[in-house]
Length: 370
Image 1 (cartoon, rainbow, N blue to C red):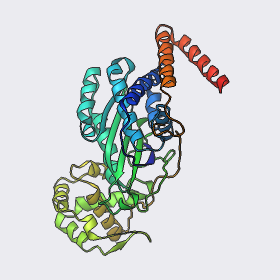
Image 2 (image 1 turned 135 degrees about the vertical axis):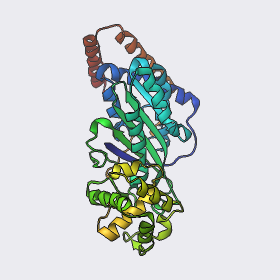
Image 3 (image 1 turned 90 degrees about the vertical axis):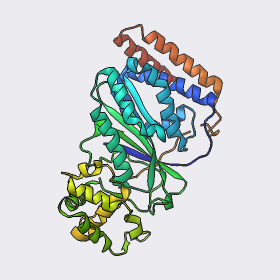
């Protein structure tokens, strides 16, 4: 399922065009080599690894710790791989801001070209965004969503949120962004997240995690509330909630959980009740505040709390554009691209076994030069 998160400080400015053009060419060469040697599924798994993704961005020459690495690398991959999608078998959809909202349409268009049913992929895109934006409330509002998939239907997601200073959970994270990684090959269930690669530099002081394993009872009772209680009854329970102190560092008050449209959403779910929490989560209009209200009612009325622990665990660092550890060497960058292109041009004309031997020799040569 979700394979990791990464917290990155916000930086101003944009990558210069001379760098982004090179990033696009080098990214395509690297991905082509990986597809030749390991296949498309391996590429998707790598993109879902936050450590590898960060290293990849550094190799392309971007700031080692900037939030812009996420959006720039994903944009470079989309520009580089889209023209070669039919040959490579990897499709890149979505992006930053308004481009993220066009992800379903782009998935449908790509699936039409390869004769695949787009609906499971569209659902995966929407649910991964909904879970990280609403079911996991860590104070970061998603603004970037990139969806990668291959012809066989494997997929990965790289999405990023910015600290929402208007949200009581987001204010302490001012100046930070958080990246979330997903891979279909690691998924056991949408609602029980493996934590093998969750990593970040900064923990949020207060998090409501409704997809943690220990929140299973809360998920059942939240669904039960909207199925068996009318909207008016649920609103009365919400209005009776006391001033809630969730940790020694933060509190939540009524104005944080009672948006104007919550009554309309509760009425909608009561008339058409969801069968389980995942269906509740997928309901249009169900957002972070509505789920937060249901979580709090679940805890007060039924003694079924969500998880309050931030799933971010580890930290990492690497190297780039801002001159750290050194300025981008354009001549060396271009030489690397030319060398990889030459290798790939030869690789296209030989058998698979010969390609494997050639790449093995290349790895041994790299090890010797180290």
